[in-house]
Length: 431
Image: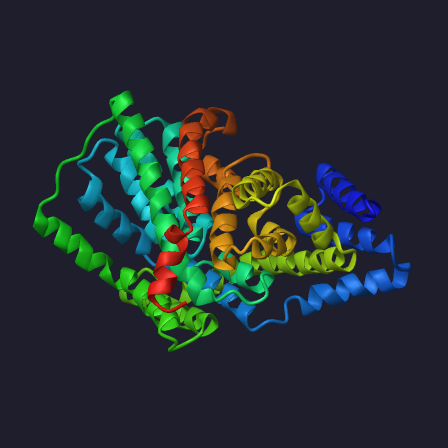
């Protein structure tokens, strides 16, 4: 085994990140330096630039900017307030009611908008002050918001699952979407249990119980927002339209809904388009750079070498999955989710398939694992958003975050070693 390309790749990437180079450029430059080990300079430069361009030439990837736009429209279209009101009627009277409302609302908002950042931003700005007013500590509110926001990346529609489908070479998007429901809900349930115990221990206030009439009214108000999930996922699962077509329908639906709620008007649309374009540009640059690194890895046979090395350690799926999970948890601390999925899927997927495990199941494991990384310093984007909105510090949030981390890791453990949690629902629909 030639260790030079791996050393060049790892060391250059770490050094570039350490000196503050943006992640996308760190990925592209380290890929180019890796290729320079084997091929001349000009072909290495042109190969990286070509792969960055051709990596984005995919019809499936068109769903990402459209889902980002629909998420932005929903974030500005009054969706969050209605989801919070509905969640409040369901769990407001339980111990830690406001924390539970935050978790349920973030799950719904994250699923509808497809963005953890949007969910953290919306729920933190609306529920954060309300939780503080009711006696909840600012740090606990931020910790709940940060961890709950990531559940929407597992519950469909999810941009990250689309990226995994591309990186895996064709895992069904519909199957991945269906596979995400139970793990996402399970993670949310564990977070709710921990939040409820913590709130009871601290003696936080309990809200008033809602009547059936109030629950029904809140449900009717939130129903148009919730119905988008039925339209988008139902259309994909039944084969009426593809994920890309579903994203376009989501944009149209959320735009009409925003006008109906009178939260969106024509003067607001240019800023919404600008915000979604900026987010799309960052995501697409990361995808392009990651595709160039994936090609460099394949050219140097690094995935095959790592696969052989892992299988030489053990052929026991329990051990291999434990090692992969530990590696991904470590990777998630230093790398954002999208590039991590694109780079490490081609490395670990051959190992998974050789062990006879399902690629759809592994996709859910990978995304659920990397969701934890979004909540950890130094690169956790959702952590920084949640802390910034709560106007507190990372150091103060760490203590209430730890039990919530354990809840997410427990959910990851169960999903990893009980494949039916991911695969049962897709199988019911014939995937």
